[in-house]
Length: 308
Image (tube, rainbow, N blue to C red; front, side, top):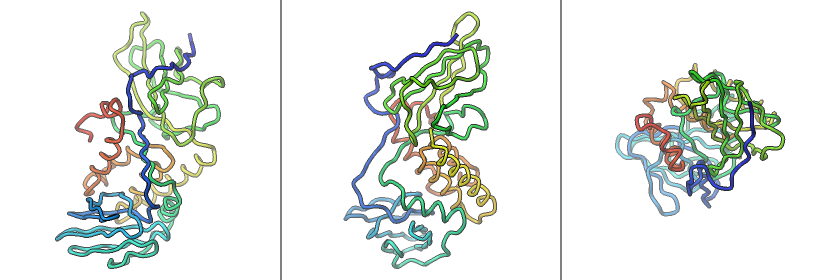
């Protein structure tokens, strides 16, 4: 029992904003990012001052100032070198050095590779999505699947005899939906073309033997990658997770978030925010909220307040 439903010209939820907001800012390319922010740290860029946030990007010429008791660590993308700015100090960001800061050891191994990639990444694009209110398709789902011939598999819903699996694009449109009595569905060849590195929202609904909807339903994210990009991401994730186990700080976990984010696998990026090691990291809640707050109203509504 399976029917394909083609996309409608009207958004399902009639939202004027995109579910996944892409904000593009006409700035110079960032040369580094904040790997640690403690206390009151300000960044002055183009004559404007603002708080420096964890994972926030900095550009050449920016001035970072730490108040009494504050501290910041900046990683430069060029070589992965870290610089510490201490309390009551200010430092000027450059492409090759941070003047006025204390130079620390450069990143090495998997962390260095990710830093280098971030330096070459597209600038100013922030695609967002909440984490813990959304589920994986299966417990072992990596957050992405191959772009070629995608196959969706899911765990059963309580009391469900049949399922409706629906895929939404970045504008809240239903691009494909299928009704099936199986726990899987293949994306058909005649369905709309999928795009790489963009998170798609999926929804799973169940129906009992009487065709009445069951109480349980699920939402989540899926991103489609080429085989090469998927293989590279899998290796990067494994390397950074191994490095994080023995690291004396949280830099590998922060870079893991950025590796996921850079490839558009945002569901997994946001999961990392909830890692036990990061929960007490100053600024981590703000960094997560920056992602959540860039969502459309419907997407934000799916994130419980206690998870923000």
